[in-house]
Length: 155
Image (cartoon, rainbow, N blue to C red; front, side, top):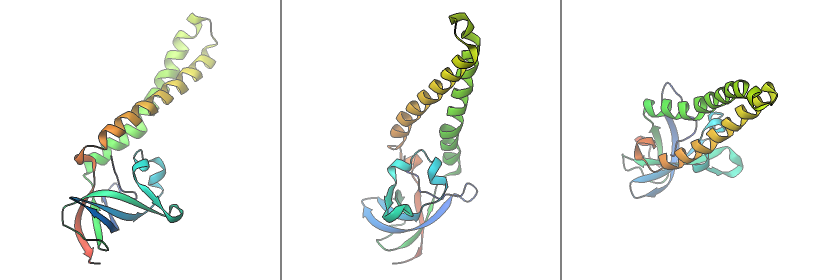
């Protein structure tokens, strides 16, 4: 799953410069934003010089060329799905583990609070492993890739 950084949830667009064209896809350099820190697909974007710029893969629907300033777009539904996957699942896992720990800790003769904390953290860690697996599978789907929707300024 390749998602360019800096996507605004309301606009779902970002501008960048095409650095390479490979078949029907383009690598686009975009400015790194704070959204990158929490993005589950940040590993597939390549950091360039000092981490201020990132290179992201996008479907080149307008046949942009190297050096063109382009506008990228991602479907709103995709952005919400990714946000749910990377933010809500770990929270749900943490809370579930904590609740289970409080319930079964005394039965196993463990301190309920300590066992609750242990299970909550364990469930959250497990959720990140599962999310990583899911993210690797989503990388292969074109529906989760951004598209180059227009050339803003030809190179």
